[in-house]
Length: 189
Length: 282
Image 1 (cartoon, chains in turn cyan, blue):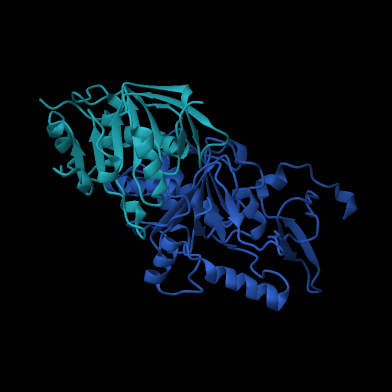
Image 2 (cartoon, chains in turn green, purple; image 1 turned 135 degrees about the vertical axis):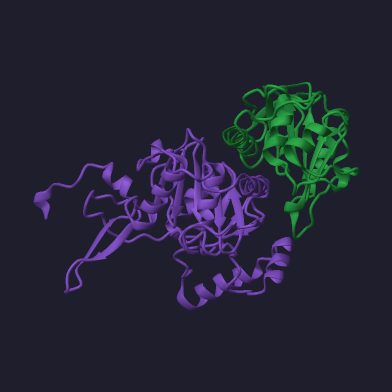
């Protein structure tokens, strides 16, 4: 049995997209989406909503879990690829794949880079990392639970590749925060 | 009321998704031109087909839309685009900058300071800042990849050497976040400083050229210049004849056969928000 997607696909995907657009424009700020009635296990509501909003037949998707694939194919009609490096949207429910192994775009066409959706245990504003860069007036604080220990080193390498590099959408429950490749992350000091 | 037979926002959902993905890449790559599959719109190229597609992809039922054409809310282009969105989305429209959540603009940035939560959508005729210097797209792509913008500096240098100052008074090239050279669309150079560290999100759509680009909020936008010839935004040295403003961008009007000139604010909402000058002065 495949669970339902958006109740009102046109309005709900618009609302979700505006939150993602704002989140990408203001890195590290947490945005709450209207909860989805039946997100497919093990996807969180936010992860599922972002996929419903952005994935379609033009976007190869890679997932590290097989359970939501029927739901994803039915609602988005997107090709599911076996190699994370070939996907435009990479979804990590478990361990995050290495950033350097994903599509990074090219010097001339950096917009061909992948967007990585990472499902994490928790997001808190006002503590943790110190974020600076475009979209941030002074600094944003963001604490994330559930990322690999070497994440900051991987991120520094990703940022150094600019304009190439992946963008990350962190999803926890029905909230999300974005890390575009421009953002600079420092350990809380 | 929404016109029957159209999807919300006129565009179909597949097109919106494609534009939305391009917009997210554009925000992550400040100043970089993202190609997109521009659709045929119910108005000709040059009338804002790029801006309209961007607006149609982001607009929601609870948005309030303002549309300006050279600063004015009441010119043909602004009125027809505002009515178009009212027919295909039913959203509220306004002429007041402070009330709007989305402002679509042709060739001006409003005088009033924009705030967080607002989105400024520019209609762009030619997104490539280098196109007058290098006509080959393959070559300009390479130049952007290498951040090789010497050609533009040479052009500015030649302007200064020949005329004593940069002669570009609109569409003055800017460097975004210290990386990509960007056309700010044909806004007057007077407006360029407003792009820098703006709290609102700025999106640019070029329909004919099929490019989308963006400047995230609070991002450095620097007009190209030289240390000994700093960038100088130009403005007519006059006051608006309606409100007396000396800080706004002015349109020049020829008012009689003798060539008598008047200057009025280009931003009609800004002008109307100020107390008018006393009539007796005329």
